[in-house]
Image (cartoon, rainbow, N blue to C red; front, side):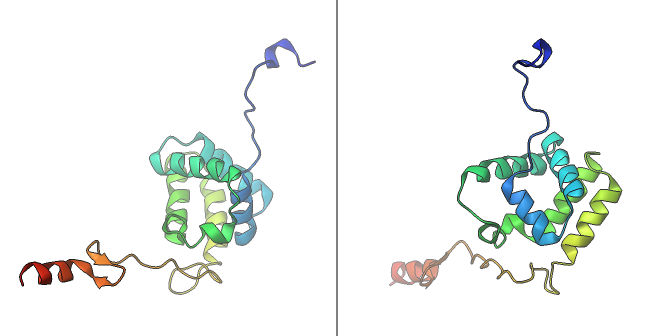
Length: 145
């Protein structure tokens, strides 16, 4: 039986989520750095970090893999590197650990700024562009006839 002072406590050191472990393996980040990154994400108060924390925990229940997530815009290298910088600014991650993780992540980025071996996400067209081309132009053409 657990001591009285431990009963009902929430685990303050939960395991690193599956997708973050896969991302760390993709980058070649060791377990200590990955644990520091996860602790920083968990304790962060700024919006982007709390959103990422929710995403990591939420995807734990989904049958997605890292290659399902990487082509998404929110997982672009510039976004993830900016997230790590925000953790440093918020003092949730040390500069040394952040630099090591960023260097390993940048080694997985090609010259165009995309992840190596992962096709980039399709760029969305303008809001007026429909699946068959410029839908707004067609509507306007038919309106003025």
